[in-house]
Length: 333
Ligand SMILES: Cc1cc2nc3c(=O)[nH]c(=O)nc-3n(C[C@H](O)[C@H](O)[C@H](O)COP(=O)(O)OP(=O)(O)OC[C@H]3O[C@@H](n4cnc5c(N)ncnc54)[C@H](O)[C@@H]3O)c2cc1C
Ligand code: SF4
Image 1 (cartoon, helix red, strand yellow):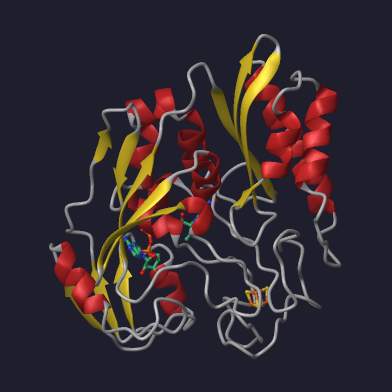
Image 2 (image 1 turned 120 degrees about the vertical axis):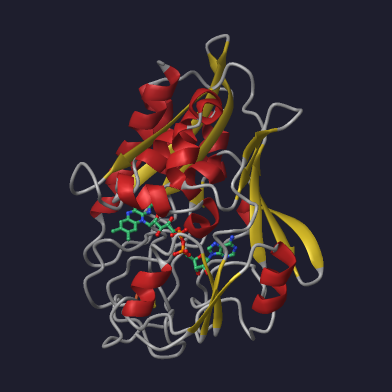
């Protein structure tokens, strides 16, 4: 591990000011915030992240889960994944989010991992995490070892000829379906970004993963209430039943009225280079009866642009089955 300096702060403005000395907010940044450290420290030990300075943000006053007057919720960036998953309001009003969080990692990791850190977790692509291999995300312009290598876990949606890495998060798939808003404090003040505009596709610059600027601190995530009478669920398929990243996952929210789907939100995990919302599936579902045939049509629409690599074609069918089963669960609940 490279030597680094370490500071901690309990003030949002000083964290932002210190972080703003960075030239980039992305790969290669010299100054990094550290929250739970469950992504950051691993990558520093692997020499994938080599910051000169860590700013410990664990003492920032951002550890509250608050309900809002309209029935939504505002979650501080330092709220631990366990606390969020087990919070009574989240369990009763946002089942999809609680289930997604509890499907991730292990209890010990969830006790450390934070809402802000989870939003920014990096890919599990083995070549990204091993500095012996070419990786455009880690070292722009070096190539992509995964394209002709072991690409079983890689994405089939949103890929480019520069990077095919999948986004590994569970929580963020649920937040995509819930149309969450990310609240940020930066050197020019506060701003809000809908999660649908937060992540960027790899294109020619896979080292850039989101719209954050140097010094930007995620302070909160806010979520509006789901429509009355709607149900939600998160279904995750993986190689083993626990402590494993997804091969395919689906976050779904539906509201059924008079035998027809009146509202649908669909997001897929592990198949996209970013947590993957599917407006295509949603528009197939709305106005139709909740039948196996319609679920399959929605799944076909969601994966219609999928582009498999040599070892991950199976993910397309797996993702479709995951989505159809999640839709069945949520509409028969
Ligand atoms: C063995 C293992 C298994 C795992 N399995 C799963 C799984 O099944 N599903 C899943 O979804 N995840 C899984 N994870 C990933 C885990 O969820 C993330 O590591 C965790 O959520 C990151 O949160 P953190 O607080 O520890 O982030 P940190 O490691 O502290 O930070 C991560 C990144 O976010 C930045 N950051 C943190 N907070 C802020 C903020 N407020 N504002 C701006 N930048 C910030 C840091 O600078 C860093 O770049 C696993 C991790 C491990 C190690
Ligand atoms: S898929 Fe992306 S992260 Fe993996 S080696 Fe290629 S460029 Fe790197």
